Length: 333
Ligand code: NAP
Image 1: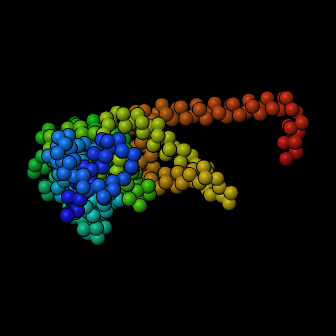
Image 2: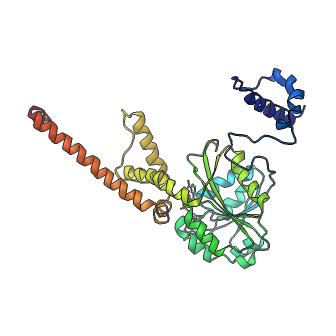
Image 3: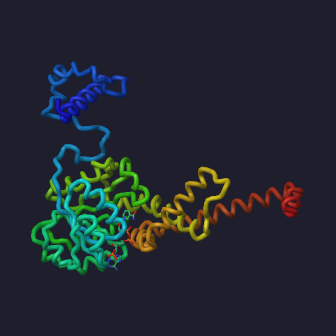
């Protein structure tokens, strides 16, 4: 029996067991004998595979092909993504402001110092991984007229409404646009991408096969695929990622570091500080400047900090008035 057939059997049979509301969480190999009966049921005939209810992605059943992927902006994040993308046998080439040709040669990636030649080299996908702050400047330098054929443009910037609007303005009408945010980086993804969030919006997609093959790079690594609008992403990210980066930067400014008596909570804070320090300040400022929801969150953070400080001082005053003895003890210390 081939591995594929065995997977199919396990898949169909475990699906059927859910259908019976069976309590056993795993498929038992001894249940192979159920197969003939299972395949007679119209709802689970192999020609009509059931959709996997747990998956949030719609790319599961589509085929994947090797892609020729060009990267614009070969900084730390693009280098990190490239290792996994090449492992999956896609062909990579890159162009960047800085000359990364030696590093690229070591990684088996063709480097172009001329953006025009890069565009003419016939990519299926062009992935933009420049800093948020340099995006508009970088887009201005791209001679789109030198594209040989319709191409899928993908961005991986950590804000989403801004690249969406910028790409819609400049990408030729016959080319597609996919906006994505792999919500992990060289540190959080160093041991693999299993279970890490990958957000995307199909902004303008006609070539579904190429788009789906690109998304499958992340799906195959076990990412949690989240299709949502760029607007919703920015709203959520301002309250989560931006707040995390800001707190991390505050801790770094305070020179907070491990002590001999760390609690688990404090260990997480030190980790947060180290993680955010590794990201460039350009990245952090981009999260603020180009996410219209971030300003409000920064305001809230400042106001809330003030409120909490106020409550603590108020409480201290209450304790001191009701029990002046405690006040004198503290002063002695
Ligand atoms: P970054 O500091 O945000 O961006 C570095 C990249 O931007 C490099 O390729 C650099 O080119 C290019 N760049 C910077 N200023 C430029 C300019 N004036 N003109 C042309 N190119 C310029 O660091 P990063 O971590 O590599 O991030 C790249 C993108 O991925 C960002 O948009 C970020 O939001 C996104 N992202 C990062 C992470 C992460 O964990 N790091 C996670 C998800 C998404 P050269 O190398 O040629 O100088």
